[in-house]
Image (tube, rainbow, N blue to C red; front, top):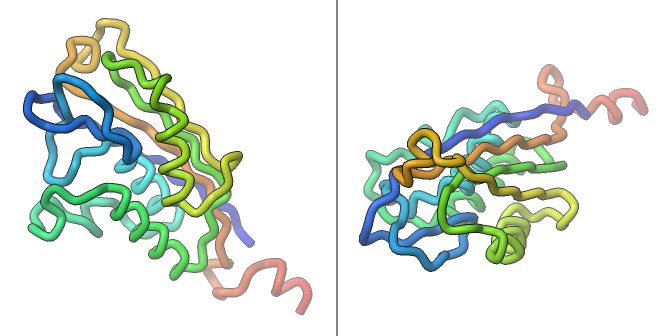
Length: 173
């Protein structure tokens, strides 16, 4: 098997009148994230990291914001679809590490629910997923309470790209 890593990033503007959804969990707050779907920055960053690790393009290619099917979409469902794409490509998720950058509200009280929701959608054990949060410390668009961002890195194993056979299978014969 070969090992591949992908990096994902997403950001969305904070606005009144929208739900704040992070990692598939609705978090009580005065503002939510603006986007074509539910604008879940964490889940979007994870999707891009997974697709990158599998060399399958990006979230905009698979779930474009020009497609009405994805208007107000639940990003956890998009994540499940991305996980299915990886499985079809012969990829196995080994680990995902992600960070949400959001000034307010604090995510620590919500982190166990976020972790559980994402692990279930990814089909991974709790030790294969790490979710962190940090603030903008008053700087930039995040610090000015204008938006939120997330970064994710995913590690997958996959069949050897040249032969479609895992290196372990090739070695044994």
